[in-house]
Length: 471
Ligand code: ADP
Ligand code: ASP
Ligand code: MG
Image (cartoon, rainbow, N blue to C red; front, side):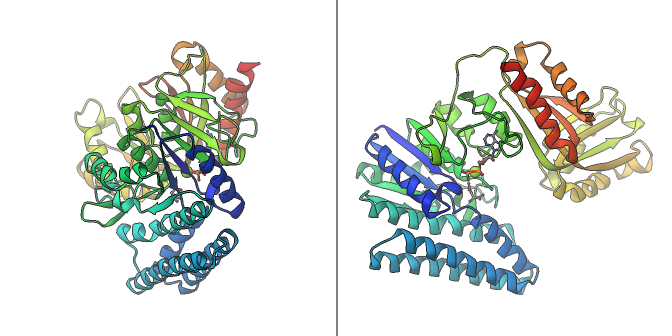
């Protein structure tokens, strides 16, 4: 069976207009494939509102979370009113929204009483956006004459209990997919699956992390042995930089799995960083396309795109980071300091985004999200208490407000002088580089600069290494 999995992101299902574009795309593809699976995100902004409702409830701010529930109710009701014509279907969907939002209200009330929201509670709450939307989208597609059915991914994707960033257990997941999803395809039904949402083996709701609907699509693609996976979003494809930061950014027609992995890891929001992991092994091509410009081909991501010599694919940036430095003369040649440093970081569950060590071994520095910095410093100080007392380590400190700017491209490996152009661009703009790292893949160079210079750094490098290189 030739199957296509298509995922529609928040903006692609975020308004009545967008939903009409989405439905036209689904209609068109439904006749072209033996099996078609649709994965949907929550309407744009809904997940952010759900997170805020939970947080404000925990902070004792009853007004805000109640207002958010009212806002969510109005937004979904208006959408249903505008989309669905049959009165009984409309009433059914309004009841669905009412019931889910009652659930939200009950969650927020308990969080308010307990003055705390756990990661598990957060997943139960944030899953609601997708769960409501899958039902609305399925009903809308049904109305257009497609045999569609909403499917909760809690019945498909089995994960560990690492809430808010759960890891799928692929064997179990593929079993569930063949039990609960494949039969629908065989019956000619178009399943509309909730993105982002999953469940543990015990059936507790988990999520795959923010932006995780892309990952849902690739997981399902692998379990179904899909021919292709397409993610529909609000830009024409993967671009040479975030178009919001660099208006001159342009679409990259083809990318390798290796390049997109670096790009997504280093902050390009257009794909969730884990999306590639399952499909790389099965070699399933992935396309990124624009819901609002559906005739444009978009970006094709595959194992071996046509080689373009000297190619630099994209510039990305990750914001809100801190650079932690462990420094001291007594570290010189002492075995185990790096291992203990990173063990202390791991104990507080912080993820390290980049590491750089000076060759004299007198300092190790690494980058972490700023919100984890206080816990990381405390953990390091406790791990290194003896070394600090002996002055073998002089200081452990964080440089806040930094960003990692990354230049990605297969051309980095075979084109001399790209590094010089990158640093030249920063020199011209008078931007100071705080730290540097080059990945062992040689597909990327990462630089740390101050937050306020991050966007300018991206724009300048883009101009010198991408815009001027192609004229
Ligand atoms: P969706 O809700 O469809 O998943 P996202 O907002 O998660 O959409 O991702 C799409 C956005 O990613 C674009 O609107 C764009 O601003 C941003 N983006 C960041 N870097 C890039 C890039 N290199 N190429 C394309 N888009 C990018
Ligand atoms: N709705 C989720 C989020 O906003 C997942 C997604 O859109 O991919 O993070
Ligand atoms: Mg996204």
